[in-house]
Length: 294
Image (tube, rainbow, N blue to C red; front, side, top):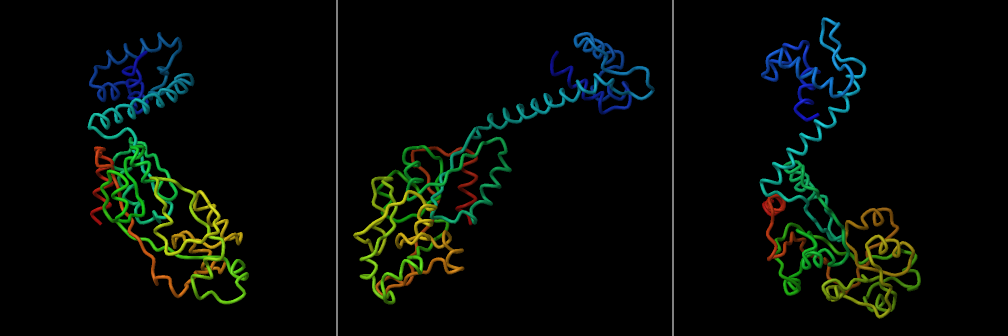
């Protein structure tokens, strides 16, 4: 049994007569009849009910065809995948995202690439505090979307293009601030309280250096979810991206802290980053062009 025989079966299923099926297959009707008989002999049961005026399967033939349809569908997928790979498209694409970035504005470009290259497997990861860039540096990712500061250029062979921005807020729970006993007006008051900081050694860089204040008392967390839960549990104050705590700020579970010495706005760039030594395939190029063009 081979795929050619299953294609014959498929043509018979979609035709009202053997003659119509033969025309679809560019065969003569006698040749098609012989091919069907040969398939029936190999299977050991009758596939087509020849006693009816209209061409139809026997019960066994109908069940057999249902399974054959799955094989034909898989064959079509395999051919499409072969064509996809022959054009040089990536079998898989690794995208690393930093949790500090709100990905909503960028997902449409990834969706477009997925539709254009449906056979490329997308491997998405969300990483904490520079770990996305570390994956890129170690060529464990093909593209990264990450906060970007000029100092990062010295941390690896990166090519970065700004594609957005993000705001950093200093926040705490109202319950946590009660221990001050007075309104928070100066950053010296914060310096006396526990600070939630990232427990990340990615790129051997202390991301705390980018913040306007570091407390001597620290609670280290290893991801943004842990950071938020620790904030809500009144374990400390912390610096987080605005989108990560928007709901908590709206309902008053967290409040933004604005000591007089703090800058009015702490903002950073969001960049699409690639490794200079890593060639981009067609799918990665499509995402790069789409995101950097807007």
